[in-house]
Length: 250
Ligand code: PEP
Image (cartoon, rainbow, N blue to C red; front, side, top):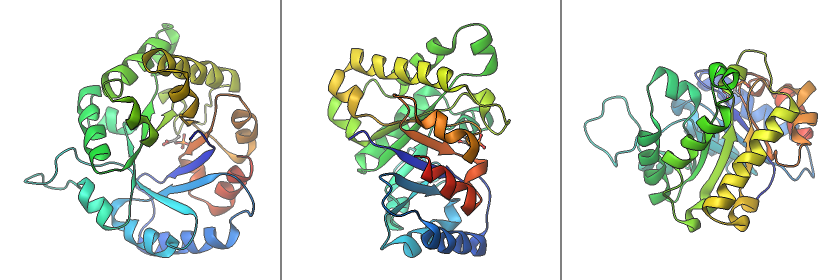
């Protein structure tokens, strides 16, 4: 069901001790009575610390990536089963850094999505255009093909386990934020494409997060847009105070 989510993507930040400290502080400072689902996505090595510490809270834990194979000779990779065995049921797939630095394609991501869903995991799937795409007015088109090639083969029922994150690449870690209007335009477009491919119900039930230099100061306005259901936060999710302030704006 569509609802507000604030998820923190830690990327390659924080060791074990820092993770423990963060989750302890987050538990202590979590706002009461907010109808916001809160998720943190620490690096693989810290997932177990996070799931164990957060077990009896309503703060969720996601992985930042996952391999598409069930297992095998894939040195350095992590499978869905491994994630589930440490209590992780959500995975971020298709982050632009995975696409850019690790050459993950729409087709590969379709495989990863299938594997995650086969394991009853929930997927936070990232889409977003690069600066040139936007300059050339191709942003809607690029995002359409990311959705089509990685997600639109799924049956309608699978969408219960899909959360989308629109993250314009030019706004990630750059301090540049899409204007609330640019975010709304894309979120509305994404919802329309889901309605065309499936139906209005699926579109209305899908949470679509915005990501790209979200901070305490700009989160309220971005989250207030009708098709924005919270955010995927990078840099500002690394400090408990900033993260909690963003949650408060959800
Ligand atoms: C991200 O990495 O998903 C992200 C949105 O990063 P930042 O908030 O730092 O731009």
